[in-house]
Image (cartoon, rainbow, N blue to C red):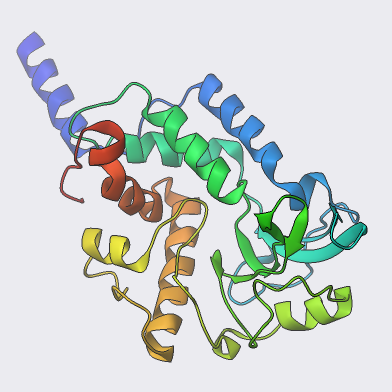
Length: 263
């Protein structure tokens, strides 16, 4: 009888997906601290209210409308900006990281903390559905405009992204509310919260509908759609394949490991 119980337990463990890991309170608390880097939230001027209707296929329950201001030394006054951010609970992000780390063939004790920090450095844990995430890319506290769609830098008109031009909130709202097919360029397709590229995702999940590059409008629209689907799935399942693809692409350099074949 003990042998039968052990065999059943082993079978169950084989059937349970790898991302179903033991979430710890420490991990959740660490994510919550990292999320304080989201300056569009911490420095909001309107409290980031929920939107009143679904937005580009994103359910209204998770979309926050953030108006915020950052002190701009170039302008010599606060620069105002507007962004629509996905609200993601720390418990969910903790689960994503735990699940992605469990895909490594050789478990790394520091995997969770390293992946958490990489997300903080890359996105400040802001997943911008749309709007302007101003960044001081070239000089500290001299901010530039970067409009986003579905977590990636996206251009809607020439000469705006990367510019230091101060745009009115009304103009920013106009750009933020343009439809997906108004996107004229996606420079790299690098997607938040980490740095998942189309090439990385295609390599890990070739049947996903993603293409390895963004050479034309069709491939850009396909990547926008894939990222949205993957993020919505991740919010409901606890498995973030965008993160998994990114982690597997850096596993050898960061953790001297590789990933198991995808499930």
